[in-house]
Image (cartoon, rainbow, N blue to C red; front, side):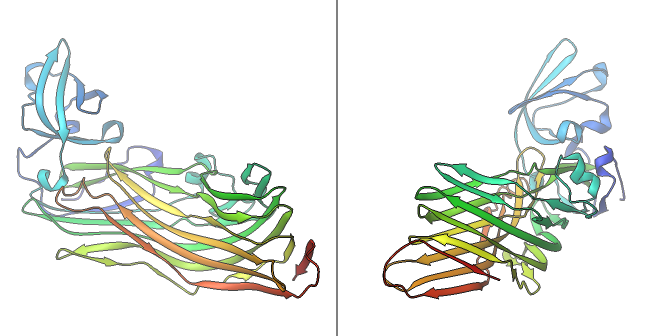
Length: 381
């Protein structure tokens, strides 16, 4: 059975393939097909406008689904009617309980319009390129960390979801995000007093795109999103300043698959070879500081499960001041991970989380013997 629904302009580039066997008659009542309009969705209830009189019957133990108002999949445990409003008292239910046999398969892609509609600052003339120039990551307690002019990130992965069900059990599952990651990150740090930092913030607004896929006649509604959190971790001495960064390009796939009760990590990346930007440093004490940016695609299904993957380009500066000699090292690296909340698929599954420590490259190494400790400033091309 093939079916395609466009619920808004935002869905125009969500491509989906609908496969598998329809669910058994009576297993799931699709609210959209029987003509009920959702009035309100609560945590444990759904209100409907009853415009069909005695033709509409919602009973205890029914599983109800809808693509309206972001979508829901619920099991009915109680029914009440007051005037023209039907109230269904509900509890959570998984797709495995609702679907005897079927396949869910869909793909989501992104456009410049998706980015612009979310209020993301776009680079001039750049396709799917976000302008990070002048963004302040952290400014508190005498420490300021920002991105300098020309900093950008380009990342708009294709997100592919596949799940198959047999005999009310999730048989196979995969979720992969694949695309080019291009970064030009140049950071500027100024510390007027010593500090220990552990901070993450989402400065860029989330880029979101709603979608509706189907298993037979049952709608599976959700929202795809891209977020770009920045973070800083470590210690910095008073009087420290630093400006540097790197550019890099890699083909990145983040994801995992489930088959025969076993998980497989599908995360891969083409050679990630960062090119250093010029370095300017002033320091008079030891310290170690890492700054990172996560590129984080995710999808949320119905009201509950969120499935997220991320890649994390970062830069780390290490300075050892006493005893002589002064040593300074600057590194760039790439980490990643996934966090799959699977309860909407099958309550018997345990959520899956992986962290993938990636490679690290040395961008700069500097050594300077001294007799008297003082404040040192040095530039490296």
